[in-house]
Length: 283
Image 1 (cartoon, rainbow, N blue to C red):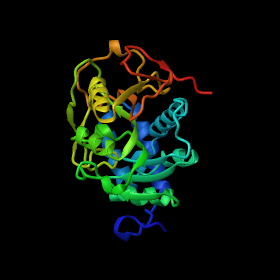
Image 2: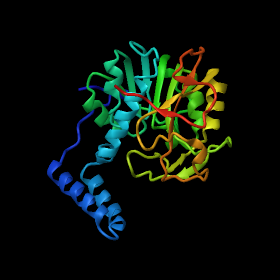
Image 3: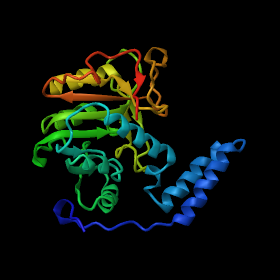
Image 4: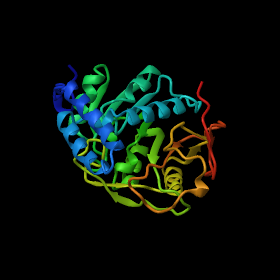
C-alpha cells in the first residue's frame, strides 16, 4: 500500500454498487418527468452520501475524459518518458493515460479523500495532497518536464498565483479549463460548492477569459499557445464569435492551452486566439 505525505497510509472507500445503480436510474427518470429537475439535486445528494466519488464517474464525465485524452494524443507533443506533475487529479482517471506514455508521474489533488482513492486506483504512482490555494511555494516538489493541469484552473480563486508556482517547477504546462468567451482580460471569480469533491475546496472558483490565460502563460513561461483543434465534445465550442460573454458558472465552455519555456513549432498549436476552430480528427 502506498504512503502519502508524512508517511500517511491510504485505505479504500466502501462501495455500495446496488444502491448507486438505484439512484442513477432514479435520476434518469426524474430528468424526463415534468418538474423533475427540482428533485435531481436531492438524488445527487443521496448518491454522494453513498459514494463521494460518484461525481467523478457520471457517463458524461467519462465521455469528457475520453475526448480530452484523444485530443491531447493528437497535439504532437513530446510527452513519452517525461517527468509529469499532475495537479487537480481528482481520483486519478487521467493518470493511466500519462503512465501509458511511459511518463514518470507524481499525481496530486487538494482533497485528502480524493488522494486516498487516487492511490487505490493507481498503486504504482507517487501521490500526495497538494492544494494550490494554500501552497504558493511548491519548489520542494522538485522540477518536472511537464505539469498536467486539466480541469483544475477554473476551481481556483487565485489562478495567477497557482500558475506562477507551477511555472517555477515545470518547463511546460498542459492546461485545459472552463473559460468565459470574449476579448476582455479577466479572471471572473464565481461561487462553487465546496462540499462536492470535484469543485473548489474553498468555495470560490473562476471562469477566466482566453486572453487572460494566453497573457498569463506568455508572462510566466515565455511562450503561450492554444490548440488549433478542439476535443470532440459539446463543451468545446468551435465558433467563439457567437457565444455569450456573460459570466455563467453553470455553462461549461472549455479550451486547451500550452505554456512552454521553449518555442513549439507544430501546426497543432496557435499563438493567436482563433474565432473558429475545428474538431480534432480522431482515428
